[in-house]
Length: 223
Image (cartoon, rainbow, N blue to C red; front, side):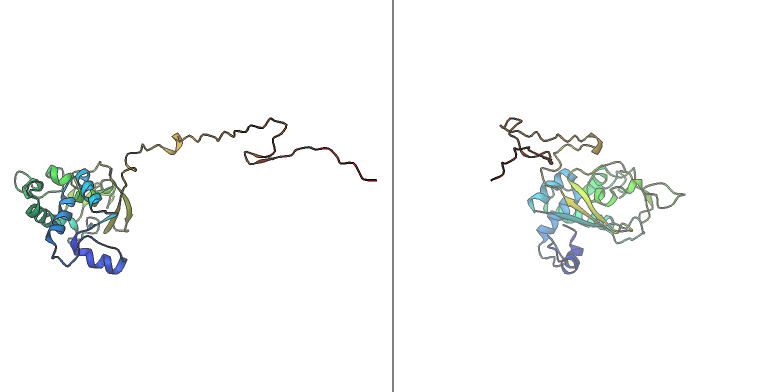
């Protein structure tokens, strides 16, 4: 899943099926993708599973100062989604009370918690582009992002290019994000118990991958 701008490139260069592409005749489908990008991660996951989405791609220019990324296109996703789903998505929710579109700490909660924001800025709050500057500084928007400390529940990072321009995430299956995560040091392996009905004198073969030699009687030589 990605915004329709990259549909032909993904199909032609990566040989992967996309939900929407540059043939924009299916406005309702584009609006559904826009709704997924504009919603919270939990609500987006319901849409993605209904569409059988495996991966999500976003373009992010905050590291190199690329102004044509998905954050700058985001309001078009909101507007198209609102046209088809006016009860769920409202463009005004993504602006501040003063009518500003901001990605910093004064940004609208709907923006700071939507899927597009999280996929663009995942781990970005830890990144310092310059030793003199703060972590999480977006060169395209000239601002420090407002939501830094978050984790993804329903998706996981699969690939990010060197300069963070292309970011790809894998959509987890339902049985993955419900499993408790244990640290490697806390994992305990239970040894296998070997069960046999034979008494110690009749055992033979391999026990726990160690050979056992069974002594026998010497045969009498034939005259």
